[in-house]
Amino acid sequence: MGGFVWALVGFVALHAGVSATGLRGGLIGRFGIGAYRIAFSLASLGLLVWMIQGFGAMRGDPFDPLNDMVWRPATWLHWPAYGLILIGFMLAVAGLVTPSPLLAGNEGALKKEAPARGAVRITRHPFLWGVAFWAAGHVLVNGERFAPMLFGALGLMALYGTRSIDRKTKARDPEAWARFEAATSNIPFAAIVQGRNQLALGEMALGLGAGLVAFAALGFFHTAFVGRPAF
Image (spheres, rainbow, N blue to C red):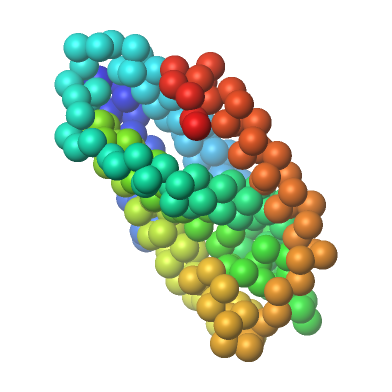
């Protein structure tokens, strides 16, 4: 239990307590943006690996109290859970392959005439919303004590991250941000429903298709990864 819990706490604290606060600006001012990004990426990767290893050890220990069932999910909940997880995969993967102006290193794209393309038309933060949908789906069908800790923490961290990124981007370039904000939305599909953008499936076909493949592949190998079947 210890390794998993401490790694999870460290991972959330790094993203919510450093990246999303004024501490980030202080570190960048002292060490430079390049050094900060390298150190932050390495720390995130190290904590993620530690968390995965700790999770495997925790799930493999039948006496670990985090494996105790807190509630028994109804069987029918699996269907909405599958839907949420599928949407999560498709959004997250589409977000990874979409050249968003909110991605680190691509901030200059915010000044383009049409910066919102692909999955960014759906939400300014497709990857983070994908994580949130994935986490919500798992909370529905996992009644163990570890579930709200892991999936709840990651889901809330992702949603908090969307607001933090918006705030930092607005502060960096208010004029370009105003134009970008007018054509996009944080909440998925809100800008499209309000007529401020349009759904262009052709622009995101590759990402959505790759997300579907990733969903199917992880479902197939789910038992090998976490010790129990996905379906």
